[in-house]
Image 1 (cartoon, rainbow, N blue to C red):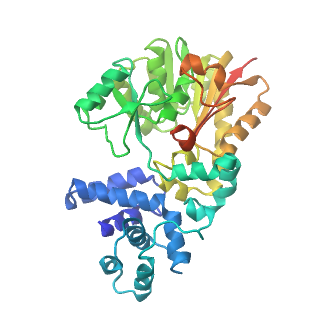
Image 2 (cartoon, one colour):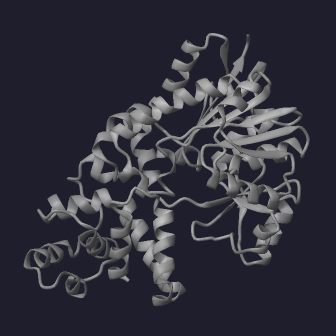
Image 3 (cartoon, rainbow, N blue to C red):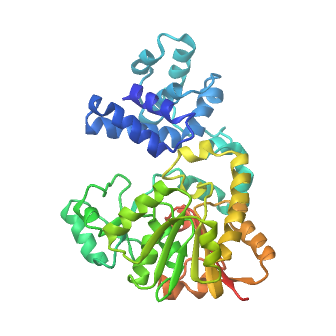
Length: 421
C-alpha cells in the first residue's frame, strides 16, 4: 500500500491537474491490481500525506533528518509518525539507502507534532500564505488552521422538488448511510467523511446531490424564488444552478453560463436528473451578454478562486497555489464582476461568491468593485438571511464569511450587491 501511495502521489505532483482527476485516472489504470479495501487505503494514505505535508517535510528536512523531502520519504514518515510503524518494514522502499535508514529509525517513537515546529509546518500550509491567513483569521488563526487539517464531512443537498429532508434521510438510511440535518442549510444532510452517495438509488433518482453546506447557503442567498430572469455567470458543472432552479420551481428563465463546454455538459445531465427544466446552459458569449444587458433580476458570480476554503477536501490545492496564481485570480475576478454587472437591471442583485478565505479575493475585491461602480451598493447578508435560509444568521454581516472551525462548513464568502441606478 505504501508503494502504491507513493506512485499515486508522484502522479499528482508536479501535475497541475486536480487531485480528483489524477486519482481517478490512476485508479482506472491500476484498478485490477487492488481490491476495494486496498484502493481505499491507498487513497487515505495519499490524502493524509497531502494534508500533513508541511509537518512531514519538517520532520524529514529539519526535525530528525536533513534530507530533501520527496513522496517516498513522506509516506514512510507518515506511516511511522501517524501509525507507529517500524522503520524495518519500510526500508525495502529505499533500496538500502543508509541516510534514509538513519532518518526513519530516528523518527520511531515520535508523533506528527513537535514543539519546535514553526507555524507553517505545524498548520501544514505554504509559508508564503501565513501573512494572508493571519490577516484573515486574527485571533482565530490557530483554531481555523487546525480545523482545515481535519477531513471534511460529506454534505448533500436535498432536491426539494422531488422529496423532503426527512424522506431523503430515510432513503439514504435504507441504503445503510446514516446522516443528520445540516445545522444551517435547510436543504442539507451531513454524512461521515467516508460516505459515498454517487452509487446510491437516492442519487440516481435525483433526490440528493453532494454539495457542501456553505455552497448551499451561498446559492440560497441569491433569493431566486419568483424571479423572471436569473443568470449563473460562472456555473461550472451546475451545483449552484441546481439550487437556483429549485428555488424558482421551474418558473422563469435560468441561464447557466461558463467558459467550459465540458462543465456545461455535466450541468445539463445534473439538471435533467434533478428535474430542473427552466435552465438553459450556454457558453459565455459577448454578443449574447450585450443583447441581455440590464435584464437580469439576479446574477450569481461564483468566481474562480484560490479554493483556500476547500483545503479540508482538496489538500493538494494548497501545495499547487502560488503568489502569481492569486494575483492572476484577483485580476480575473475583477474582470468577471465587471462583465456580469452589465446584465443586472436596476434594483437587481449580484451575488459574488468564492470558496476562498483570502481577503484579497473577498472583501478587498468587493471594495474595489464598488469604487469602480458607484451605481451599486452593498446589501448586508443579515437583511436576506431569514427569508432565504431561515433561522438565526450565524455571521454579523455585511458579508457571509463561513469557516470550518466556526461553522463546520468549507470556507465560503458571499457579498450581495444591489444595482441602484
